[in-house]
Every structure is written in structure tokens, then in C-alpha cells.
Image 1 (cartoon, rainbow, N blue to C red):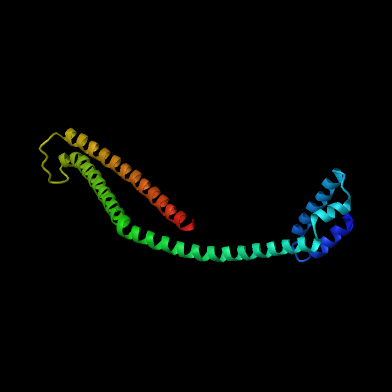
Image 2 (cartoon, rainbow, N blue to C red):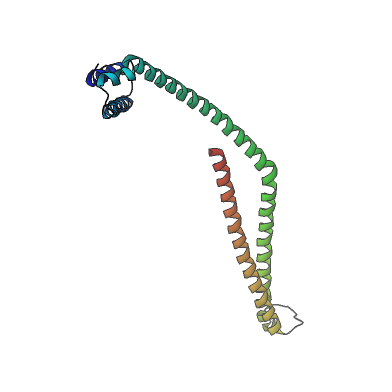
Length: 194
């Protein structure tokens, strides 16, 4: 059987395979003929060495069916394994977050609220001291101050400045807590998606 007849029979026998695979197989067998001819063999000798086109096609078809079945089985198996894995991760993370993370997080939020309250108290005390030192000697209020008004004003300015700095520190800590919480939530989501 010459080259054209051999390739034609192989093409007919391979019908049913995807066109890309069919073309790749035919190309490989054309190369076998090219290599054999370059070594001085005849087309008939090459076709005898390659074997029966029907047997070759049956081997390719059975390999292709096995590959398809394996792919379907693995995709079904992986999806059920992934669903179970995701469920287990969600349950474990939920337990971990509820039992271990939630308590310290609420403690940190409570401490931050306390810091805000302290900063606002310091700021209010500083403003009260400042305005009390100014207004008290004028007689608007019946306040007896046992220290010089300039000392009260300086003390009020210092406390007000400390209150403002404390508020700025609280805002900075709030931003850090927010960024940390977002990163932790993102880590949880990434862990679930894997």
C-alpha cells in the first residue's frame, strides 16, 4: 500500500475523533513516511512497518475514550471533594472566629471606645480649664480659683492639646484596626476559595 492509500485508510478509520486530534495523527504518520523515504525505504515498506491503519485507529479511539472517561470522573470527583472541603473549611473558620477571634476583637473595640472616651474627657477638661480661667475672674460665674489665671490658661491649653493628640491617636488606632480586620476577612475568604 502506498503513502496516499495508507493515509486515506487511516483518515477514514479515525473518523469520530475531534478534528484537531485527527489532523495531528495524520501529520505524525506523514512524518513517518518522510523519515522512511529519507532513509531509502519504499512507501510499501514503511506502510508495512507502521501496521494496519484500522488497528492504529482503534488504539487511538480507545485511548481517547479512556481519556474522556477519566476527565469526566476526575471533574465529578474533584467537584464533590471541593464542596466537602469548602464546607469543612467554613465550619472550622466559623468555630475558630467565634471562639478564639471574636472575644479579643470585642475587647480591642471596647478598649478603643474607652480611649475615645478618655481623649474626649481630657479635651473637655482642657477646654473647661481654659475658659474657666478666663471667665472665672470676670465674675460671670461664682467660681473661686486658688491659682493665677495664666496658670489655668496654660494648664487648659496643655490639656486641650493632650486631648487633641489623644483623639488623633485613637483615629490612627481605629484605622489600624480597620485595615487589620479587612486583611483578616480577606484571608478567610482566600482560604475558603482555595
